Length: 308
Image 1 (cartoon, helix red, strand yellow):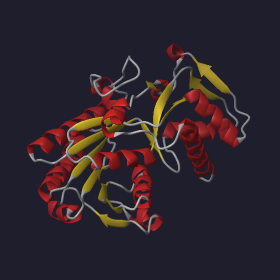
Image 2: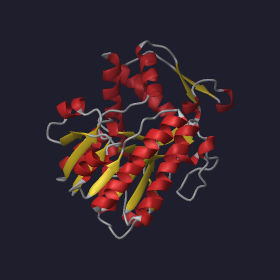
Image 3: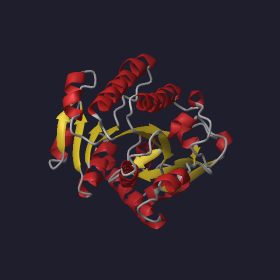
């Protein structure tokens, strides 16, 4: 396949491009900030893109069979989200439809579900983005999903939406995770919410879902949760202590008594059963294998934090 990753210079795009390249696909990464990526991934074709420039965008999209939109500002300002992110998304959708792209994939977020009281969460769960920890972000992402699905139907562009909570590849990001690492490196206590956990997905599994979806060109307009394994914050904290050889201790706090970051007091059990039924999705590795991959990603993140 010829795959274009728009906004692909970030952590997800870097690992996704590597997976697709290793699987024998022709990959192009388009991003407004591409220089550092190009230095890290010399085997992957790159180009500078501006999603407001439709002529440039048409040239970049031309010849690609699959287009994945990873581009997003992560702004908390509604003006920027809807005047830039959403408008850029619309420009890309129109360009892909006019170019006859065989599959458009939009990468979304579990945040569009809001703060679900029931677990696990499947795609039939009613979306309440206004209740999310970052409501404006979640509202805009849900809008982008719906625009992709509606414009896809109107312009005969096959669209699929992937939703996930936390993706990781060779390393793993996240400011709260890095702060926990810094605390461990300094031997300070690691405060965790008892029972808080979430669904993590490897970028390789996202890549596999992309391949499976692209192979079913008659199916379109579908939304899929993706995941690889469930991890509790308590387990993550203990792994951080082990990998840093820290003297830190875990302090488990009842959810009702928690006064730290709201992100650490969330539970996200996403069900990926629908993706399994409809496209044959399953994690590439078993639970033990994915735990080892996570442990290595965490070890690499610790090195990055320690070297700063």
